[in-house]
Length: 223
Image (cartoon, rainbow, N blue to C red; front, side, top):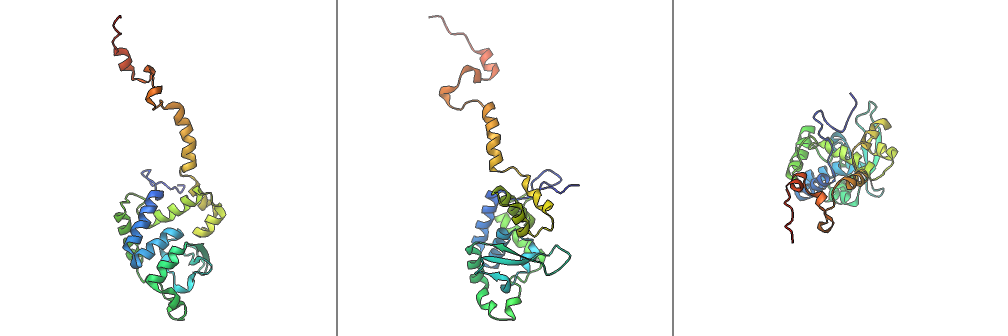
């Protein structure tokens, strides 16, 4: 079966823009290690295991990127650089003190979040629930898929999205081109406008009234 962004019940597996914004707001509200983990997940589109593997030595604030190991490939030691906003570096410093850790050979290699994968998964689910996000998209992969969909809808080149997501094949990245975005909705609206009646009362005519109302209308009295 061809991989799809819809599950077996036809429900989307990615967060839409408003849900992503709600998730980020809740992560900021919760703060602490849970907050930084969720923010990093949302802004990198990384797999949950890849964010869990992040250490201080792989935070490149000068370059404006996080260096993530691509963990789904057979060969280990494959890394990619993912740009993140200054907000991420600010939160990582406040909560994890990565500047000091980078100066210590031992501390620099320690994972920022020493959690198990199930624990991390639960934290993400809790933040989503707090943000009112439910359904098939309400899981860590929903954030990864949302990152890909959002990048495509903002016209980022597929080759760059492939690099950021750590896909081995461009075909995998191309799946993110299928959802309906703002531009496609705008085009569809041109079709709707041809079919929908005018909403301006001054432009409404008797032809816009339901058929039964037109048929039952009483004739005007003679003057």
